[in-house]
Length: 304
Image 1 (cartoon, rainbow, N blue to C red):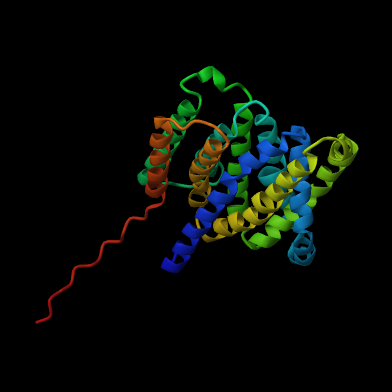
Image 2: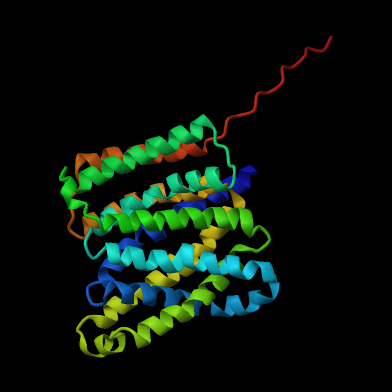
């Protein structure tokens, strides 16, 4: 990467951290009225409708071999995780969900190494380990040392991060010719109809919207989540995948917990010393994993 591209990559990472770090509190507000399935479906429908004009325009660029891959991107990167995160947050705090999301780089590295023969420097591995260690500290701090507070619903978030890791590698190595907007909009357009069918024909969504107090506020939170946290953020995210490496891109999930925990504090959750230690380790791990070794400059030969 050039210096300009590298600077832009870090800016995109910061913006994505703010957007996705705020996603968990929006899911929490959506769950005040709607079920996990409804939250997931509304999120996908809102994102797909918002990006539909871009999808229609971009369809002419898609080759036959890419359609199935784009469908996989829609499921792995959007549809399945949207439902998994919503279901998980019915039983675990939003801040814990945000923290567990930081497992994505680890699974990205594992999937890349197993299926795409990717090799990583010792510095990258060490950075990931430090970042993951910071995540563990945050998990422990968030439960007050009570491991029983992390029930099996937390595994749904872990499963979602595995899908994210697979999606990252899929975009980077299998769909190199399509731009970020085309990948995001069309992949969402392919899974959006499933969300519509589920939402309007398999849930009491319309009944809740017209009869439950606070339904429109919760709906607004989920629609905002769909537009910002799924549609716009995925365009930025997929652009980041194109610009950098899967490890750099997935490292954004090491910064998301910091924003998620801050939102948790504003929502009445306590911040312990472990949160500070964990977040510090995460930031250092991201820096170390993505720090490039400076090339050795050739010695200057004195001119006689």
